Length: 252
Image (cartoon, rainbow, N blue to C red):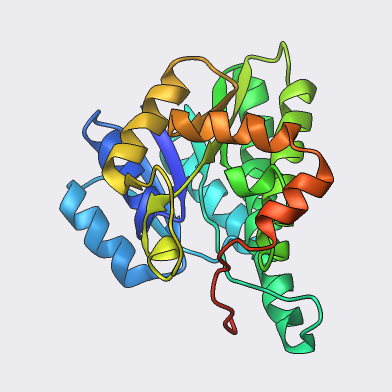
């Protein structure tokens, strides 16, 4: 089995790498932090390819994909997991850079990850493309305009891609996690309902991919929350979430 994973140096990506390595997969691991990637690859055993690449760099991502395709072959599975989250405020001019960076990584980084593999998978008439979205993309959350909007864009993008590739032999899967215990959520200073340990979240993601589903919210309790969020009328949603906790702002 051949598997490519972005955002593999920590969090969900690293745990997914461990899950698939335990299945004897030949991994292509992509992340900006080369030292962490090398440590992970050493822990997982030899034979895995590592690519210290920023997913927002389209040329570098294309080169990494070409290397993996040439040395390993067409992957069975590509997981676009890389993502960043930071609190942002539209009225704060200094947040403009952070807002742009969130979109570069979360949206364009996903496109840069999946695009190089579509044509080879089409030629092979097989493969699975997975995008890690978020429950935060279902409705806009205060203080997280960039993150919510980027994940909403990801959900719609993956749906479009799924329909485009219908009947081609390529599956497209959208995974929308709720709160997962990773460095990304460690800075949150508000309650995080149904939060999952990252290793358990990774196992559930693998099961969701294997199940043949095209869309999954993890954990299942957050799927109920997501459905309720869609149904809430704007006045009620606004009144409830105006008081919600907000992720700390920072420059990135």
